[in-house]
Image 1 (tube, rainbow, N blue to C red):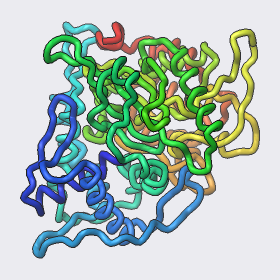
Image 2: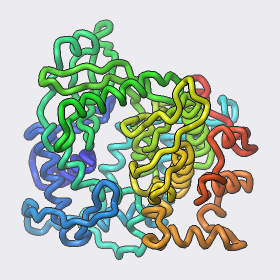
Image 3: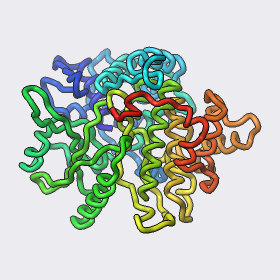
Image 4: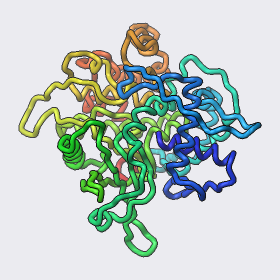
Length: 473
């Protein structure tokens, strides 16, 4: 969400200010010669709030089942003769057919290539800096343009940014200062510098540790903030539990957690490997949608990582593109284990059922909305199906898997029963692919395929991974 505010703020300033905008191509970081990153974000946030009040008058809370009015906040005035674009204009441009085709064709030349002689027959070229430049250019070109809203605009992946506006700013608003690294953190991992992410959990910075000369080893440092009304004891227990789970998982398709320590303010920091290719969410967003072979490669890597976590007795419970990180060559890694839980200890044979709602609405399975206990592994598999369809279509299939409250999910259930099937899934390339996706998106969790079964399916066995996916590059 913060990156969205940065881009909106930078676009506004580049049009209405003489300040010079600079871009770090290696790290994908924006800077302004006059004004801090937080000031830029504040400008973007104010512009966003004004448009939200006018065109999208509700903000959805954490579980998206309670509606609240966004705060009334006046945006900065726009110089005469210059018209600010509405958020719906931005959203709809991402979902329009013409824009999607142009975006996919142009971006695929830069990020992905079919190469018959290469391992897996393809290669990925992922630079998060290129992606942020592209997103900025797309938003800049849309300023002042009018476009008729579409009925299913809310299914755009961009709308997730808007939906998380209130929660993210409440929880992360007090974490806007500079790095407060302790001497231990600096000695072991170097100096924390650029902010590359900001969310409900806190801030993610890049730590630079000098290796030789001008060569730096980079680490991702997640600076946590305490939740409202959370005691010190609960705060410590929550973060230590998350770290114990994530650091115990060692797999090529899982982000490696290296350390957990406190900064000079006493707040916890988690040190992780740095994935320079960005996350899957912004890749989909900037590309419109992904190519078939590209989506298949990422999906198989995701299922490999998920099968391993389930074998270790851990369920993720918050799988979404934002939590899937990428290396520059296309190795996908699962991160974001804040909601993970152990459903089976090493000495146990049977999985424990769980209950409760967590995660992001478009990826939450239907059984989570009930009062009954359920298998958390099936929840993760469902999310993988939604993620695959987001890669292939560039949008969500529904807002939430609740038949009586979401017309798009109701259409999906009708399509499953219809002999012609459900349109978006029926448009997939192979029958064996469609069969697997229908299975992982089965509303009945007892009929849903497991991660191990998905890997053994004819479709997934036939997917050829790129070299980075096979060798964890």
